Length: 349
Image 1 (cartoon, rainbow, N blue to C red):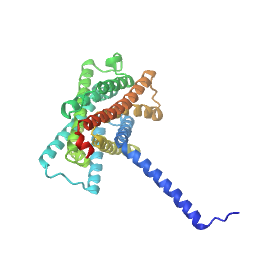
Image 2 (image 1 turned 45 degrees about the vertical axis):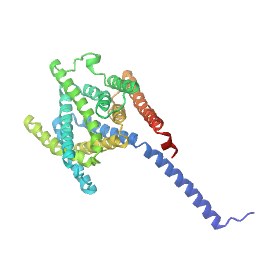
Image 3 (image 1 turned 90 degrees about the horizontal axis):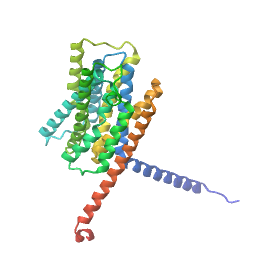
Image 4 (image 1 turned 180 degrees about the vertical axis):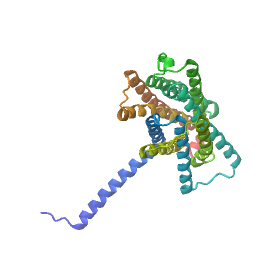
């Protein structure tokens, strides 16, 4: 019988630990190469959590009250994050950065305000459907302002994503007006607000990429939103006399969590755009939010989706995968073209 020494056991253990460490490092490296997808899906989860909280609170508090709590929670979370991290501000381009941040804060406040009106005057389903037509808008804006190449595949998958969202939400302007809808003039106004929201969201995604060129921390991007959104929410509550305070601990926690989820969603969305500078991929991945909301509503609130909704969810996922794969192939083509354009001396040197 062969005797096994303690040193042999130790070497075997170290060898196993080394292999496990290498495997973990390789896995971590593979994950970090897909940070754009991870950030986008993290943003989707945060915004889904916020949507489900709002769905829970909609019968308990007025929309303006929820909006105010979202703004307050976002601002407080932002300040705490800023104090802990203390990110540097790009002073060399201070005026340009300040101007871009001011524009972004106005766009963000307008989006929240217009989406509130869209939910009230139209229906939440219509607002979501129209809002997620933003991929096609971002695709066009990326070509106009960022110099991205036009691809038929990119436009096709963007349109497919918008069609999928429409099938999931089944907006009445496509599937017919129902008795539960409001006055037609109010409905048209709500649809107009939702359409403006889609355009504004697309502009914000493009603006995030411009801010990234100055290495602006996302903390400053969101910090400018609170001082505008919070006074706006308080003013709306005062003007319409709809303010009410939570009486239960669960209601207070839900209201406070909406702002935290919104803040984290914006942070993850900003990081996703900055990772590989591909806003069309990020905004298309963000359309999967409606799929997560659909699953969450079924599991938590028992809301059943029709077969048309499942078809729409499938189209959204196909569009998300297709736009990601198509963008990767497009980047490889650009790289190959650049390599071919280099002089032979530079290649061999």
